[in-house]
Length: 265
Image (cartoon, rainbow, N blue to C red; front, side):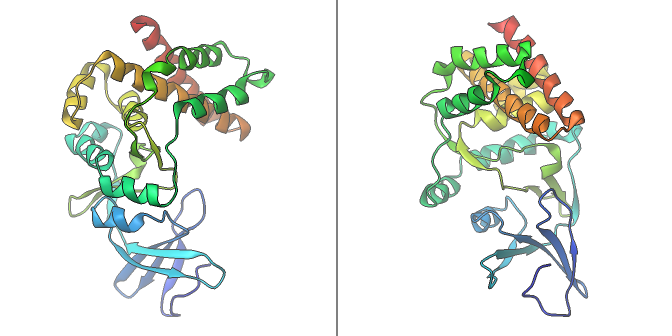
């Protein structure tokens, strides 16, 4: 239980996979509390990317509690991910020099594609549990087209851009929440996931233009590279945890992406 608030506050779990999020309510005032939240929450709040930060407290045990204004609103639907404001907000995040500078000051190092590939290769090679032709094809693609993703501009990437993390407030303000998995990486990592999960291929050009870039061969290779890498990551994650439904979902994403690359390359 969260300590450090007065007895007049009613604190209840607010859901989430970590169990570290809470709702605190006193009369008409309500806050969203989180234990050991991302340390750059203040910058995200200042830029209007997440709900307003109210205060931060360090507890006696060393935990840090952040309190944000409770967001009255709802998550976007999968269909709403096609809205222009999603592309605009993601572009704003990727072009935020403040976020990137803070990450660097925290000692965060860019996540290089060679590191991603080596980690995946070590997990999948010589492991009979992952003897799947699609897995082999994906690793082969990552290795063959490594040159296309080397030396790219690195930005702060959210790395979990599913529609449940995009919150639309009752004031019509759009937020992107849950920054626990954020890294410094190629913006194609976030862009590729949104395109593959939510945008029909026929609309990719328009979406990319709304975001602020034009489609070219190298960009598409980068997008496919990161989608395959993230799909392999999630396949391994859900296999280890025996989460069949999620595993099948990412196997489907991997297979469909490989089919796209087979046509183009």
